[in-house]
Image (tube, rainbow, N blue to C red; front, side, top):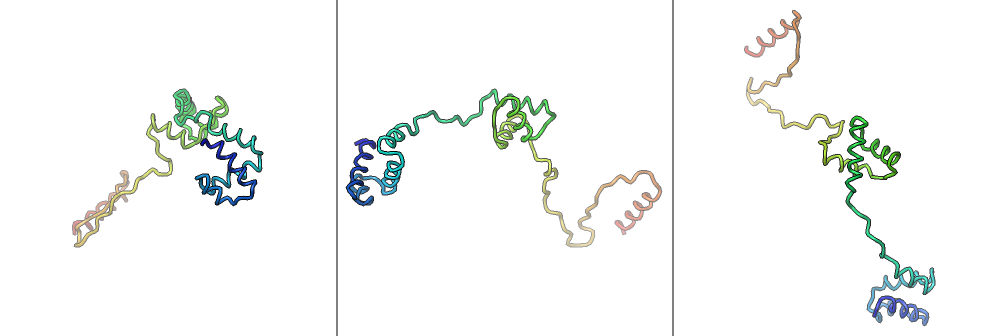
Length: 165
């Protein structure tokens, strides 16, 4: 039996005041399916529900891949607007081409052509800093340009004396 005939039988049994659980057992369907069918029939009527049931899931599936033309537009906007962010690319796409793309999808497209990293994550986390067990085992120094001024030479000479004592 097709599902349409099962829906009609379900409605006839429901009109005879049979419990939904018993209808489900007799038709070999889940109790929740029977409840959904009955509520749909009560809302749209038997013929209306059957029409909606036949038309359900008959359309084409939306494509998941972005068209290559849209990718070219995203790259073009990115180059034209001097490496703008994904939100601005989205704004220009909607304004100029009337195309809506989510910001994560735009960054996914940009990652195909460019190496993208966020502006707030400039320095990556480094490894552990070595610790000294004995004296003068590990020396950690920061490098700075002190220039040619006289006080800086004195500072360097005092640091050298301290390091090699």
